[in-house]
Image 1 (cartoon, rainbow, N blue to C red):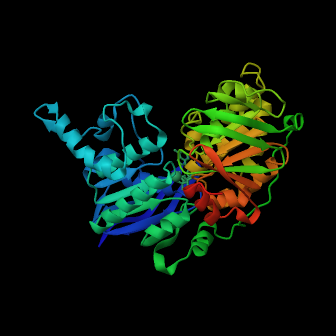
Image 2: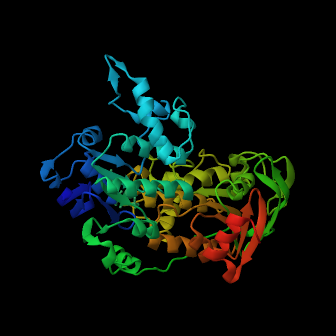
Image 3: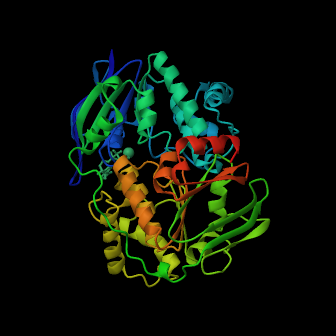
Length: 499
Ligand SMILES: Nc1ncnc2c1ncn2[C@@H]1O[C@H](COP(=O)(O)OP(=O)(O)OP(=O)(O)O)[C@@H](O)[C@H]1O
Ligand SMILES: [Mg+2]
């Protein structure tokens, strides 16, 4: 039975057509993948379904009846729960209060805290989320907040559960648990709609696939078995060339110090033990490991974010890495995180201002004498280099699609022309085409700069790295090069700590 039917939905923002005759039909007891490039209209379609955005035309029906929700809370009350790409949580409230926005269980006039806890605890256990319910939400990690958002949706016991890139902030273990839960919901006849750019993940899970391209439905509810990843990608891209030519942004300061980045005996209690690492311009050095094994801690040490108890870190100009991210940026270090909400963007500010943000710190001008005209010209160049879909550099970042926001994060750090570029899962939430563009860009940036890359995407490590250090319990257990940088050898070293 079709639970959810979307017909001929159109939505225009100013001059931008976000949706154009979009269609979506979802069966009860199925997992439906909603796919498309960055900016294709996926999030907009979801917002139309949940009542967060009013469409210009078209209809949404639930079990055959036309609906038009006045708010996402109304949608949830009617059995349609959404885990949105931009989390809708209140950082100042505690975890428990975040779980029940506007619909706290009541006992008389008071909220029934006991009932709230009793309902929440098993859901948290199922998600493997181990946090105290009275903690302020703002103190949680992004992954934990993502899980809280998922728990909040599950607690409404939805008939239709829509998840917009729910795994982009999660590690492997949490992702696996979430996918198990979705399989169980399918058994219970829930209709699940799942958006992800990690195609292997969706294809392994889903029953049907709908693909949007430029706001139109180009594949509508095709059975999973009838499609493979190549065909899905072809539908996403249409007749667009898969890998357009592009040049690296102009570089200047990077040429100054062509020395190496040196870590000697770096130790952080409980995290890193006696790490040695030398990296020179011209190669991309990968860092891999299971969550907590220390690979991302190395990035944080080099970015000045973590105090060491022993050893030293010398930047290419021979000076030790300073304390604090701001000082590290001024010393030529850049840290790009796939977690765009953490090292975030100023969503209400235009693209050019966001791109200029780090650059002004790096050049020590701190916004005092910035010349908007030149900064906008520089931003325009990055916009085309990275194929960022935005009307112009004056568009507010909050209006860009998730993946395009992620590219702006990368652009703003590249604009600072770093000598050391640190990347932590830089392409999470970026579509396949964008991923290969960014990979090519990283290769060209690496001719002048030192690049260290952490990625949960092992194919990404294989695609761009010359050398990968695998960390196990805070120490380097293996160094892989050439054809040994592959899924099998990486996983083996990551899981066993064997060379
Ligand atoms: N509030 C808004 N104002 C103006 N334009 C918008 C707004 N919201 C979305 N858009 C535009 O609509 C188009 C579709 O965006 P949408 O967020 O739906 O894409 P998406 O498929 O979810 O992409 P991603 O994979 O990057 O998250 C984009 O061109 C985006 O810039
Ligand atoms: Mg989106």
